[in-house]
Structure formats: C-alpha cells, structure tokens
Image (cartoon, rainbow, N blue to C red):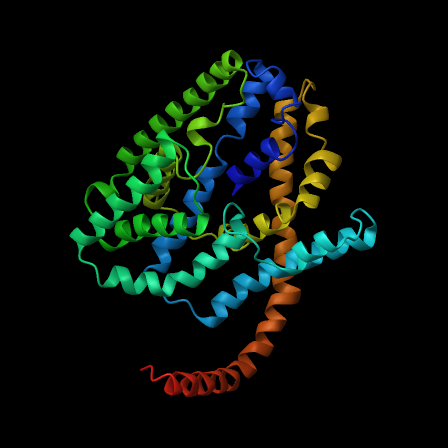
Length: 352
C-alpha cells in the first residue's frame, strides 16, 4: 500500500501534469527521483489483489465479510464528502452530490469500486477453479494473459479493472492450488524481484529520456497500468518472494494490515481529497525545488499512510465493531426471511 500512496504522491499532485515540473525537465535529478519513487503504484495494486486471490481461493466469502468491505468503503466515501461539504472546502452541486451518492458509476479505473465488484465474483470464481484441472487452469491463464498482458504491453487496449482482477485471481489461485518446488524458492524469487525492479526502473529512465525527444510524457510507459508486462512481472515476483518469507507473528503488522484497504479508501476517495491532500495541504509541486524534496516525499507518504491507519483503527473500534454486534444479533432472522423470499421467486421461475 505504501507503493500505491507513493504513486499517488507523484501522479495526483500535478507533478506529472503537462504544465508540471517533471514534464518541464524530466531528466533532472529531482524529476528522475520522483518518477522512480512513484513508478510502482500499479505493481502495488497487482500484489494487493494477488494476496486476496491467494487466500480467498480456499475460503468462502460470507455476507459479514462482504458487508465489512462495503461498509468501510461507503463509510469513508460519505463521511469525507460531508466533511468537505460542511467545512466549505467543497461547494454543493448536483454533479458532485450524485458522484458521492452513487458509489458505483464506472468500472474502468476506480480501484475501490472495481475491488468491491470483484469481491462479488469470488464465490463464482472459486466454483470455476475448483472444477478445472491443472492443465485447464494453465490454458485459461495463458489465454487471459495473452489477451490482457500481451495486448496491454505492445498496444494499449481499453480494459476494466474488474476483469483484470479476475486474471490476477487466476494467477494467485494457481500458485496456491498447484504448489511447485520452484514456487517455494525464496532466493530465486528474490533475485527475480531485484532483476525485474531494476529493468522496470531502467525503462522509466529510458522512456523519460525518449519523451524529451518526442515531446511526450511517457516515462511510465512500461508500468503505466496494471496489465503491462513489467508491472505484472514485478508484481508476481515480489508477491512470490514475500510469500515465502518466514515472518514471525506480529500483532502490530496484523493491525496495520487490517487497515490497508482503509488507507486507500481515505486518501484516494475523491478528486476533492486529491486536491486537498496533495496540492493544497502537502503542496507537492511547491516543494519540487526544495533541497530536502526526497526526504519530504518519503516523509509525506509515510505520514499519510500512518495517519490513515490510525483513522481506520479508530473506525474499526468505534463504528465497525458496534455495528457488527448488532449484525450478529439480527443477521440469522434477516437471512432466513431473505432466503425464503428468494426461494419463492426461484420456485415461480422454475429454477432449482
């Protein structure tokens, strides 16, 4: 998640805008640092989704799990909108109200919306992968990666994150369901991670240089989206490396991990938040020429992450836990009524 926050620090702040300082001088030391600092956001998304796929392919999504995910997402979406509205930072308009009130209005690039919709697909994906043999699973992976990764790299194609997350789910579930000796080789995946990260970093610098010749902002060309080859390669290799690391149980790590989705829901919830956080409050563009800019960038990202984690821990304690105490008391009766009505509808439709 830190990689995603760092990516947003660079791309959502005006630093890479056509009139921004990076575009004006992409080969300066400051620009190259920021480009490399923010190049890994899509890779972070791939890792995040693969972690979900790795664990959920052998688990079941319950209504309570899904309600926790949706509740967290909607809580921040509506609360932050109201805070900006009441404070006067954002003026009321029908357009902004509709965008805030309607949580799902596109599935192309909005990560949180797509991730929630993707979660709804997981029970059906599990049925699919459980009825595939290994050879069929590989064939489906090859086909999916050809459609998404090959065409996404050699020629940019329009895609949506929901279906891309399904491809990542297929990759992670294969790793979990069909363990191989090489999958457990920590040294191998460590070396591959270093190599793919190095090549990706070189591609960023090379494309930044090429962009000066073509007068185009193409520094992130090979990692510009989650389905480009190097974004996938680094994501898979780093996922495999960290999966194999033997880490001792840590209550602190588990607490922070439980709030990572909350970090995303808070700091990237809307265009207004991006404007307030990166442009007005932290003023990333204004600090571009600062002598301590690298330290400022790192400190800002860590600070945003830490503050968001603390906020989410408080939400869990004072909002989520009390709500789900109420949920646990009433869910069985509600679910029984729902199942009864669903059965009647299916019976009328002659559906088994």
